[in-house]
Amino acid sequence: MTQSKNHSRRQFIGGMAAVAGAGALAISAQSNAEGLMGPTKNKVVFQLNKSDPAYVLDILHSAAVVLGHFNSDADIVIDCFGPGIWLLVKAPKNHQHYEKFIREQVESLHMYGVIFNACEQTMKTIHIDKADLIPQAVPVFSGAVDLMTLQQKGYAYIAW
Image (cartoon, rainbow, N blue to C red; front, top):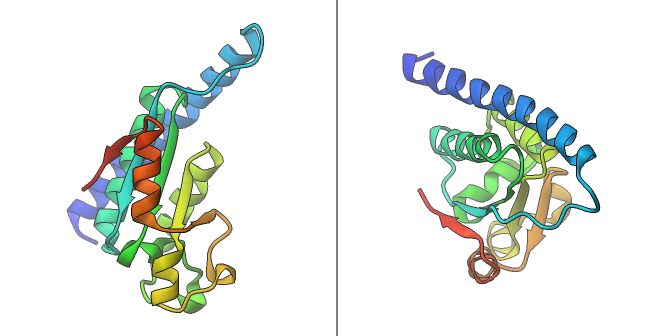
């Protein structure tokens, strides 16, 4: 394994540890708050349109950093389309065999409320059904339309 991959993993794992701690603080603070918490002011949508594992890890790490920075008070969507759809496709049909580490990061981020949207237009093009998606995936009509709609709702747009 290259030194760069090890460095990226250490950074990502450190970020996820920070998110876990921040999540515990946020839960504690929420239990002391009066009434129901409203929607967050911190909203971001990440464009994920490549299948390169290093690119995918960078985006997952960035989402973890946002969660940590805002003490888990962030609405985060990762919009997967084009070659990025492979992040959300189960192993038997997946042409991009991501290592277990990447799958675990998706599961962990999902537990913190990160939403992973899967473009149905891309799915049609590459003949992927909803049953072929991992449980964390949320099919949306179009990745491009979803990006536009989320920006109209106040989400900051992050593209790599």
